[in-house]
Length: 104
Image (tube, rainbow, N blue to C red; front, top):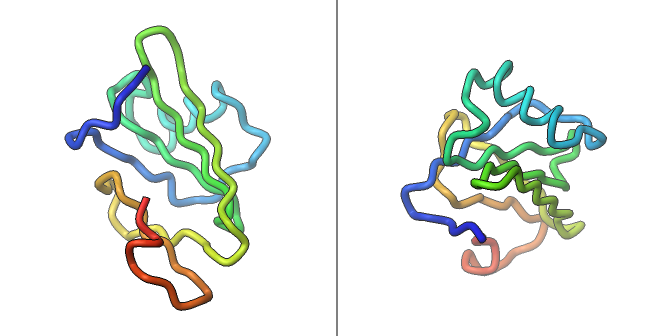
């Protein structure tokens, strides 16, 4: 089992990714588009065009993990403008919520 260490880097692929891409396709994107090693101890985050689904790719000693999350209909993700982001996502919501409700 893996742990989300506070020193863990999170890389965001800002362009939309086809939801049919599997682990091999996403690992290839990490190498070609981001210029990074997919086997590094980092999280690689991808989203679809509507930003209502995210995929997180992570290498652990025995293989890749691919985590998929479909966000609630009232929340979308807003990517930041930098390439590296700490392990917190900022959700932009259509309704007024407490900031603690939108922390991951």
